[in-house]
Amino acid sequence: MEQKNFSEILNLLQRMEKQRELTPGELVIKGRCIQLGPDDGEWDLKDSEEAFKKALAIEPDYLPALTELGFFYYAIEDDSVQALPFFRRAVEIARLDLTEAATGMAGCLEERQSQDVASDFLGDLHCGALVEEKLDEEKREWLRQVLQARKLGLER
Image (cartoon, rainbow, N blue to C red; front, side):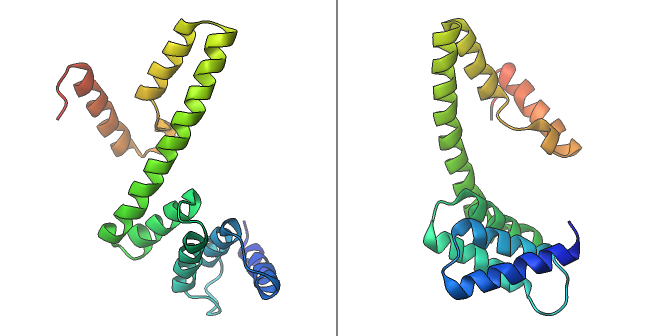
């Protein structure tokens, strides 16, 4: 997306904010646009942090805001200590959502196909919950080693 588009989105969000409170989703978009938009002095990276915090004040378990605020502290502020609780909560919520969705899908698979198909699905999901393609090579190798150690019963 071009820098101009980020500015246009921010201008639109500013106009909306004068009329009503922005939703958590809109606040996350605002924070992202501030981070990715032009460095023209109109916005400061702290404005991005504030947008994410405001989204969480409205909806404390809003997964995109937790993740974005975690990355703000981790990547922009270089503060993994401050980032960790946001990532931890995001993973907890994602795991709960994934468990709920997987339970529903397993039920459908059992009803439409068989209990074995549903069990295989749950087993594969349990071992492969991360989207490996999204991990860098170093993390992929680390994940392979962890999974191999678990297969061999060498868990830490």
